[in-house]
Length: 176
Image 1 (cartoon, rainbow, N blue to C red):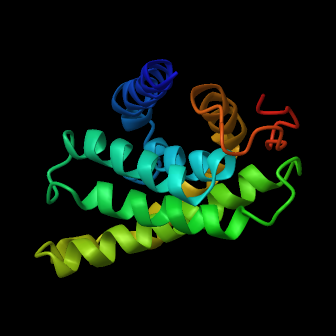
Image 2 (cartoon, rainbow, N blue to C red):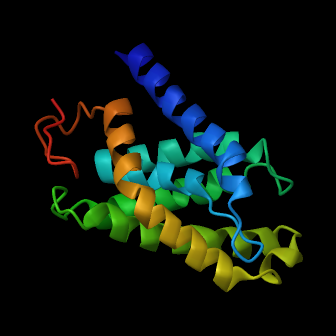
Image 3 (cartoon, rainbow, N blue to C red):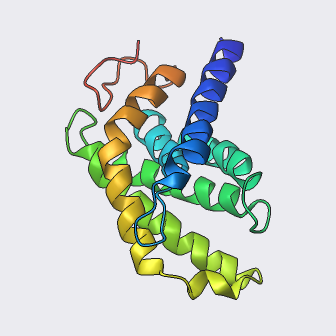
């Protein structure tokens, strides 16, 4: 079962990285591009709770860091924190609610981008606070809200939660 979980999660992470590095980087609005990899810890947190959100955030962040000129590990740290935070906030919510994935995507994306820029500046990258941070936050949150339902469904396939067996997901389908 663990091998199947690792293979599925790897496939989802690779799919998101491929989409990010091929399609999304070219889709610029005002010099800003979306960041769909941010959705992975958010979706994992909705599907599997804070621990899975943090783990997926760490893994997806490490993979994303391979393609970024920022300090290695920054995306992993921020992804872990956001995944855990979204998992805590959404744990008591109705996971079958249609609005949960888009709202969590907006809140999580805003938190991710602001935390990423702030920690980056603390780690010697002051230019991260001097870019169009408002434009980045608005675009990333908007695009991620639109793509969130697909991300949650993909994550639900990759991470069938054994510890939350029988609990409904945001897609309204039992995790069994």
